[in-house]
Amino acid sequence: MSFELALFYAFAALAVLGAVAMVGFVRHVVAGAMSLVLTMVSLAGIYVLLGAHFVAALQVMVYAGAIVVLFLFVVMLLDLRRDDFGPSRPGQRAVKLVASGLAVALCALVARRVAGALPAAGAPPEGFGGFRDLGLALFTTYVVPLEVAGLLLLAAIVAAVILAKERPRGAGGGR
Image (cartoon, rainbow, N blue to C red; front, side, top):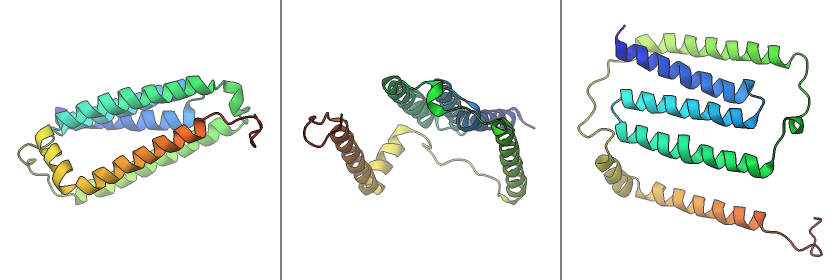
C-alpha cells in the first residue's frame, strides 16, 4: 500500500468518524459543530490528495470556517442547553452503537465490492482543481445553475429577515 493510499484511507476514516460523531454520539451542539469541522478538514485533505488544492482551500475557508462559525452563532443565539433535548433513554447508546456498526459494515461491504470494479484512474486534465478552470466552468457552462443558486440564497435571506422581524403585540402576534 502506498503512502498516498494510506493517507486517503486515514482522511476518509476521519471524515466518516466526524460525521458519525456529529450525528450520533455528540450530546452538546458545539461539540457537534467541532465534529463537522473534523469532517470538512478531512475532506479538504482528500481534495489535496487529488490535486485540487484550490478546492481544498475553499473547503477549509467556506465550510470549516464560515459555515461552522455561522452554526456556532445560531447556537449561541438560541441558547440551547443539554436539558432542552430531553432525557436520554436507557438503551439509546446501545442502539446508536449498533446502528453505527451496521453503517460502517455496509460502507466496508460497498467499498470492497466497488474497489475491484473501478477502472484505473488516469491523470487529471491540465489545470484540474485550479481557479482558472473553475471560473471558466462557472461562468460559461454552469452560469444558469449559478444564477439560480444565487436567487435561492437571496430568497432564503429575505425569508429569514421576514421571519426574524419582531411582530407588533396587538396584530396577531402572541409574544
